[in-house]
Image 1: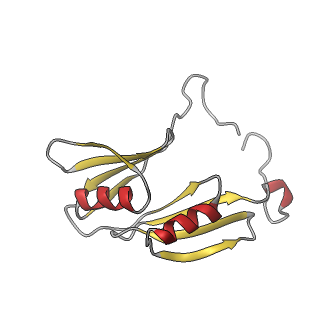
Image 2 (image 1 turned 90 degrees about the horizontal axis):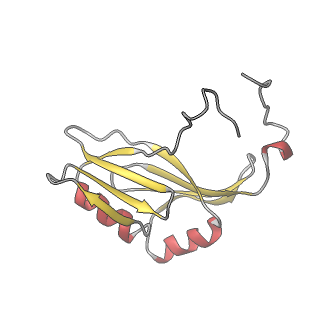
Length: 139
């Protein structure tokens, strides 16, 4: 996968910053339900982060108004095993584990603030799925 732009300016990572009603409650849920590690809490408690492994980082900020839920996709090695683990932990599954027409095996959960987290692994490449189109090179 390539990217536009000059060499040496490559993007390193994408980290969502989720608004939450209670930063400490969000930290506890992501730790206990999803198995994340609490990475840090800013001194006034308005900001915090969880990490999962070396590549997943999720930041939280205390919302001053109503939370508008966000959604994101987390690519995993084995969605079936993760789904079973989350069920054992009592995580509410809002979309069941399924193989999709777009070549993913996936399921979704919702956190206490309404953020939608979809977990999945690829079963097919985009080249194997006729409905995917790739743009001409350079566009």
